Image (cartoon, rainbow, N blue to C red):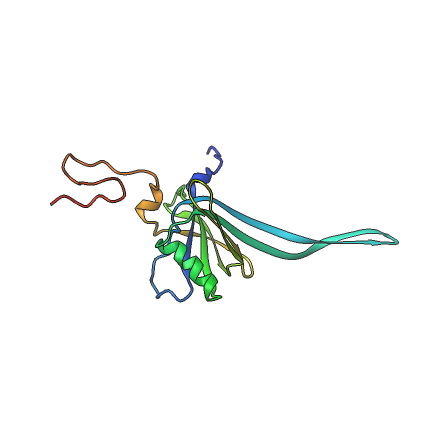
Length: 174
């Protein structure tokens, strides 16, 4: 077995409002450019007459997402709605490289939205979201990954005349 590094472009973050209907699919906030999952320990560090004492303190975890702002994107709206209404949101960090059993490695956590920042650059407006995790994330696997997540920047083969229109807006030809 050869070990391979994880490619950042093969990691996506999914979100779901906590009030979503049971059985509802998680949402992919569109136009993700970066994602960060940070786990930290607070260090207990005290100096005594007998020497230095070090220990572990509280643990914290955060997700941070950077996306191009897209009004109307369901995933981005789930995030901003949770912020506006001070609600929790569910977050999954998903690696799109399949395990041998066909599942996808993931981390799951409940979060609040600490901050939402929009940077209006000359090119695309950038949305940065900080999501501190409540408690700690849980490892697991997902089996129900929509095909469009696996092939985010790709498209499948099509026959001449099968579809009409530009990529991303092509209706099926009748």
